[in-house]
Each structure stands twice: as structure tokens, then as C-alpha cells.
Length: 62
Image (cartoon, rainbow, N blue to C red; front, side, top):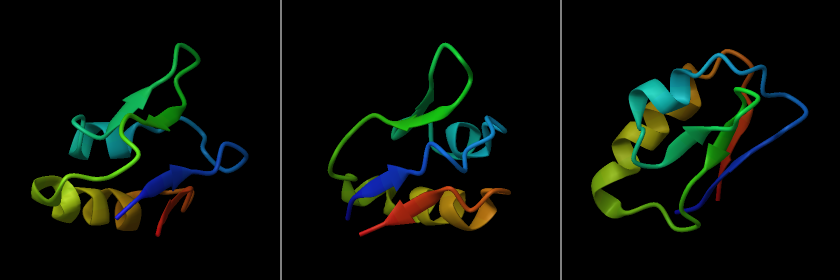
């Protein structure tokens, strides 16, 4: 599984980082970024929760 953040939609709420800091981080400007190209299996559920919890629907999975 891979995750990506739509930079045009992200508003820096930080929900993804709060739910899964092993995969998401916040830039110096406070916007989300993905730390790893491939999501480790042990973090897949947390990433799915982050995707469904994002208020801007800015995270996509593939």
C-alpha cells in the first residue's frame, strides 16, 4: 500500500500525523507529508483511519 497527500487539499489539521506519526509528518509550514513510499503492514490500519479521518479528504491510497 502507498499513501499520498494532495498538497492542494491539505490544510494542516494534523489529524493524520496524530493518528500515525510513523507514516505521516508535518512540514515546517504545518502541512502533511508521507515519510515512507511503502506503508509497513503494521501501520496499514492506522493509515486507513487517518485517510477516513482527514477533514479535507487530502490523503489517497493506492
